[in-house]
Image: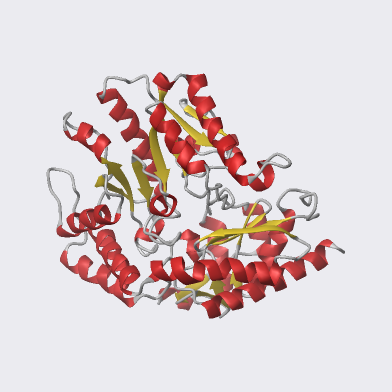
Length: 457
């Protein structure tokens, strides 16, 4: 391969000179040096210096089937030979997009039967915004345009998706936010529950914030509520069991659509094809990306419920689409990826074995560690809260500094783990076994111990 003609230092120099990285402090990156990842296999990635790193983040929440899958490479190669590209405009389709649309609709909740394809989660959330607002306009209610989201929600990095999301740091770099978005409390009991308030009551209070926002704006002006079943990039915030049923009741009461962002949770991470099934949610739209191809090709989709689809299909042309909507190579890879997940029983493994084993093992190994305030998980999504004081939940200053040390110690120990603010995140490939989990827990402990030593000096 061409890169093998260059040293690590040469690749780093070219990267520093020309590559703008996403979500990166470039001064810090260039001072510390960038890691050059060259290959991957199974649950590991390898860098240009030959270091093996256990990937506890599945790339970026996406490599559910693990790395080095010949079936997926073959699907891409064979499709490129047959039909490398054609669009789905001009009243045309191709076999792979038709097959995948049916396959996804068959896996989705029963009331969802239409699929619109894009290339990224950001694109799909933009599409969902447009689709929901256009639906209400076609219904003769164009004033229903406000979308209620949550603080710390992440729905993508385009201008519309950033405005809909609830990331304050992203808002600060956006300039004027797009109008029509309202943000309410996140269902984050660890920090936001009142003293003595149990999870059930907190879940109802967090849901009531949505109802209060609807009433303040006027239900006649509110198009939808949007939420990730579990807030991923915001810190794996898992809502209490009382939250989603109450959200659904409120949406139905005020005729507000329910948009579900399953870009992270879709395709097996919660022990079901969709978290909507895991949590008993009946959304009007579901956005997916990432794990639909296990990250092997860029592909995303909006799954559109029958109520919206019926109106869209009966009111002429919808002026929306992308050059790569339903790209044949991406669709072929997605079909092969879904085959792997089904054939190897990866979802059943998460639901019946590894999901519970991961959380129990971490609680056993590091639950009583002085830096750990809480460990929570759902399927193969886990958060570890990093605190200065377990009793008071006091954090280290500045915010996020201690978690960054834990992350760095974890990588030094041979495992990629993410720090989000004061929270450590694990979102591994669904191919992890109990043996993999045991090894990962040992690295987490070493990382916490190393961070504690540094913080105490």
